[in-house]
Amino acid sequence: MPKFVITGGNKLSGKIAVGGAKNAALKIIPATILSEETITINNIPDIEDIGKSFDLLKDLGAEITRNGSSATISTKNINKIELSPKLADKFRTSVMFVGPLLARFGEVKFPHPGGCVIGAGSRPIDLFLEGFKFFGATVEEENGKYYHVKAKKLKPADYFFSTVSVTVTESLMMTACLIPGKSTLRNCAMEPEIEALADYLNTQGAKITGAGTPTITIEGAEKITAGTFDIIPDRIETGSFAIMAAVTGSEIKITSCNPEHIMSLLVIFDKIGVKYERGTDWLLMKPSKNIQSRDIKTHEYPGFPTDLQSPYVVLMTQAQGNSLIQETIYDRRLIWTDMLSQMGANIIMCDPHRVVITGPTKLAAKRLISPDIRAGIALVIAALIAEGTTEIDNIYQIDRGYEKLDERLIKLGADIKRVD
Ligand code: EPU
Image 1 (spheres, rainbow, N blue to C red):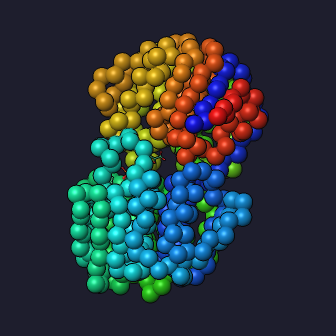
Image 2 (image 1 turned 120 degrees about the vertical axis):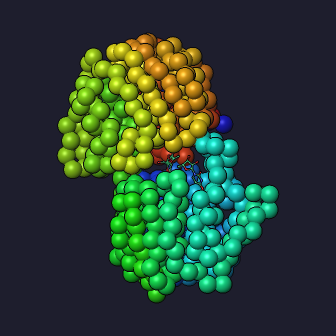
């Protein structure tokens, strides 16, 4: 298993370009099932979960031609309604294939999806199933491990989300696209990736209004055509690199990004003394001294993203004073902070959803294991300032979210090696 070996202490400098958003790409790939025409997707990040998504689509019978960060996809000849358990139970977003398959074929069989362990149990899919039932589908379950969802004829629905969910909002939005009549989704997630998906589907014949707000209405279209989808910049990569610059006291220009999508982080930077300049598609991080502590509470977009909580925790270990970090989205997303404590950080876990950090503290190198994508990048950031040489194992979990991270950080001057 490859690992990262990182020697801390180097100042970083230069430019780093942000890639296409993982969490947008992972939805547009299954969305291609809604159309029988050929679609071209640009700016696809070259990361693990995308490869798995393409494998799953291919296994269903789609033809895919990849050319660098672009792909041309035809799902015309899809001839299967069953997601291969071997492929689908390896990643959570395999569940995103269910809505489009149900909309096009009226039936889907699939296993409980896999993925990183950050939520309750093996991360539930109850809301997906509940939503499909609202559209008139029946769901047969085998021990919560295998599902068969089908409908003779789907009907429009008025559905209120009891829990705000990004992927379920996207999934039901895609399903409703081809159901004749008007569907309304209420208390929806508002992430930019949802709006991007709706914008694309609308240019291809869908009639979706309100994506990016809590209420989305969808008038069923007869068919979805297909064109070109340019994946929006990854806002979590943008925020992770910005925090990396702040923690290491470096001047870094982050390009090909959309700073508007990380306003919840930038307003905190303003309050805690992290200096930066920004344009429409760039962020220039300036070296900052005497960064102050500040509490955060993760929240659905446009609030502070749970996916930036872990890098922010590292920043707070270097800030002056106490900060309270509250994780409200996932049950197990603060457990990794134990590794930062082992590196010398002063962190008290109040309960699984809250930690108090007192900074600043020096960090020392350790042997670490990356538990999930976002804790993984946080450990990399911590290693960049730790005294000594840190080894991070299980970097598969980092590669799932950040394309060729080591190569990009070496260009900024980091001492990071990928060792097999
Ligand atoms: N939930 C349920 N039942 C469901 C689905 C979700 O109870 O059927 C719960 C989850 O357990 C969680 C809450 O709802 O407690 C919210 O989770 P949500 O469904 O919004 O998360 P998601 O859609 O599975 C997406 C991103 C996550 C990101 C969250 C929150 C994708 C592929 N994933 O997940 O990204 O953390 O929204 O913003 O879009 C990551 O990139 O590292 C990542 C985990």
